Image (cartoon, rainbow, N blue to C red; front, side):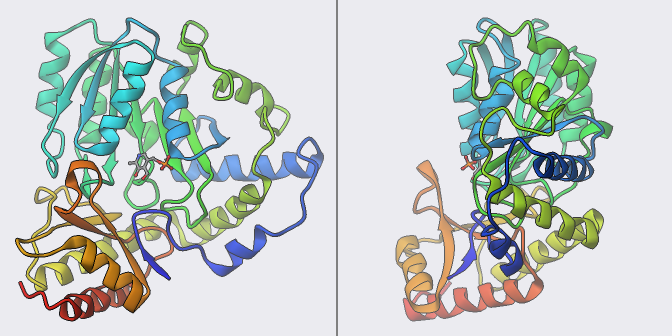
Length: 362
Ligand code: PLP
């Protein structure tokens, strides 16, 4: 099955195979070397000099770690949401009993830095800004993130970012933009199976963790920091995924992060052009379309589930539907991770043939 999903994405054969290597002592020298290599390489990808920690969890675990280590009950938080994953971040903020001010946009819209500034000026008690960089559910990217991060800093706020599906597909300059906490997940642009979350933490964010009153154990980053000094993780890591991560990062490094991002931009543009040529409209606001996934509006008369079923059963290709209230209203064409222009051509070809097979014409 070819995966034109926004995750899990396809895994190159050598990365898949290396996952079957024998286990090693996760408290031994081999592990310490592996940890050193992957943590250093992750820093390059994140654009940070700060530590990046690796959690055996999916992306949501990384988001939870980002919240529970920093935000306590009664803290005032600005949550910016432009879709389903922004809403999930809001749920995590509510879970710890914090007081959210919600800046919510319609599906397909991106956040406007002016709105963020107005919200922070209106409530000077807000200490955190929480936002999604690439909203996978709508194929929309918050390209004003650097401006928003500057505004957050000017208003004495820490900024916590879901970069689960943006990292490697679109520039993320953690230190240059002043992002305090940045989270990603292995099954997205990293050419890996699901199961690992990556989280970078700024010095300022570390400095507030000891005062954060929210209970935590598995995701306690201070425990992770202590273990990393010994080249370990506090709990048994998903070792097979760590082998795969080492190889994936070597591949990203040898391609060069700028080239990786340029490849994603070229593939995304090709996908958008092909989809528009088939007569479809995109959900994302112009200028904010994602490098990782394109969300396509389903026109009147198109049964999305029949289309996806046909693509899957007759042409061996998986596209994604809409999530939550977007179900039936959109479908999504993923183009992140191990992806080339040929994959985009194949995906467009399958889409064309599937539409023909179900007798739909725009
Ligand atoms: N945030 C974004 C932007 C995502 O795209 C996803 C996964 O699709 C998540 C969070 C959640 O990650 P996971 O499903 O790995 O827990």
